[in-house]
Amino acid sequence: MGWIFVEKDANGGMRRELPIQAQKGQTFSITKTAGSWMPLPNDKNGAMTLGVLTFETWGAKLEARNEPLTINPGAHYEDDIADPSEAFVLQPSSKERSEVILLRNNDVIHSSRLPNAHIALVWKAPEVQVNSSETPNAEIPDSEDATAPDGPEQETEDDEDLDRTVVIASNDSRATPLLSAPRTEVIQETPTIDRINLDVPLGEAFSTAPTKMDEMRDAKEVAAEEAPDANVKEDSPVPSEPVTSRRRSPLVRIDNSSRKKRASPSDVDDEDEEDEIPAARPAKRRKAGDVAAVTADKTSAQATTRKPAAKGRKRLSDTPQESTPSRSQRGSQKGSQTSFQGDYEGPPPRVAFSLSSIKSTSNFVRFLKKNDGAFLEKVDDTCNVLCVKDDTPLVKTMKLLQSIALGIPIVTDQWLIDSSLAGRLLPLKPYMPSVPAQEKEWKFSLASVWSTPQNTLFEGYTILFTPALKATYADFKEVEQVCKAVGAKKVVCKRPTAKDVESAETILLAADEGDAEAVGGTCFSKDFLTMSILRGGAIDLESEEFQFVAKPGVAVGVGAGAGAKGAEAPKKKGRPKKT
Image (cartoon, rainbow, N blue to C red; front, side):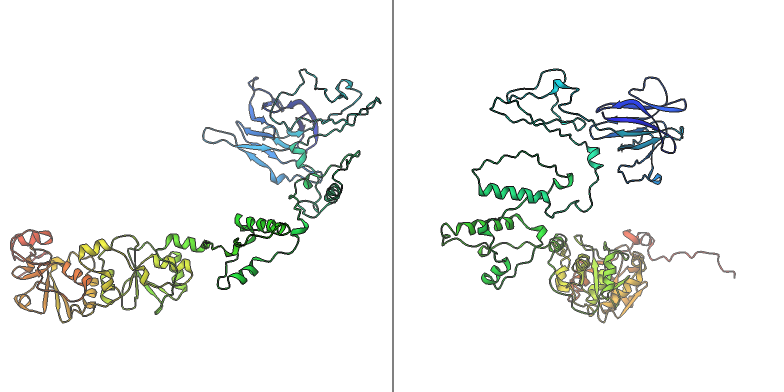
């Protein structure tokens, strides 16, 4: 037998059993007929195909065609009741998508086109009787040298087929002239579907407690050990075990010599290595080396009765072993440049960010606020930490210059990331940015100005910006704050006068040589301010690195338009006043 089709009505009542059987490798097309539908081996009649069924050894798979099919799960157990709400609608296949469902025993297929006609897929297990009166020619001969008869029914396939029944016959040879009484047993191989449908007691499923079969097997092993030369002959067949009790964990036999309680590893470590405390490892993650150590202890316990152990042999606890970092340590070492050592010292961190990858809504900022910290939008007198982006060159932003001027520590955003992983705020010094290439190009040392205030750098000086230079800054108020942070007495933006040019306490900053407002005096470029803050120490007004003299009529940079017309004032816009 095998898979058969059963036609049912809308209430689940059986109408008839279709005279069609499906075997492994066959494909059926479910076609619509007048008032019903029929599974056919091939779609040859040109009728409308609703689905395609393909049968394999393990079951059947269904693919919908032309319109959706509804699959209701059948009752797979004796006490099971199918729930109509568990029905699954299989959509038809198309060029963009294909949907297939695996069918089980008693599953029902129906369509909206035929609401009163349902088809159920039922598995029927084959039944074979051995030594039956109906098949006298199939009796197994008594001779041990007898072979299976040759014929068309002889098995030639190599693959195992779960749909077929295997008959195992066993006979005992008799050396007497008496008529032989062959003992045969019929063993039916359980298909996959029947094995799933077995009623298994809940109390015995996945149980590791000893059963009656285990006690019988242990009693036989003890008898075999006590009388190894005795020939034990069993005439009664061994009762078959339930399916759930066949797959059990292997039995472990412990010899009498190794039943003595062995000292725990903690006792050995306390005696030999009092200063070192090894980390406890869960039993589920025991290494193969630990298993080998237990095996070695059992072997050495058996060998003590034969000869003493060698004097030069060391125990496992005496052998030095490398410590393996924990999972949290391995994860932190992957993304951090330093180990999580030390704690943050100082007031609660009020952190500002300059071109950082950490956003104000990230989890790292939430961790900062949980540890009494604060997220700042700008650098002011309340800020005490500045975070910049890691593994990128420094950018001369106003936040960076303001932090150096105020002596605020500058760290990479990895400090906050590692602090979040460590669960505490870490020290700032190990996370100072490393920029050797920029230090060489800009001729400064970040370590010399890191966390060192530069509030007296421009003390007593007035910094004058020309209007052309002011136009190059996006927010001139931040520039004024930086100048005041480095000690400037006054910050002005205007056309310099002769008094301003001659004053020794006024530093004139212009856009370039074509700046019309700076004609006739010695000027400094905007880099003079930024580089003086980065280098720290004292300013050098005699250096010619950033000095230049504005020349009239030179069109360079921002002052090109003004330099072409000399000192001519720009025309006012709007209507002239009436006289």
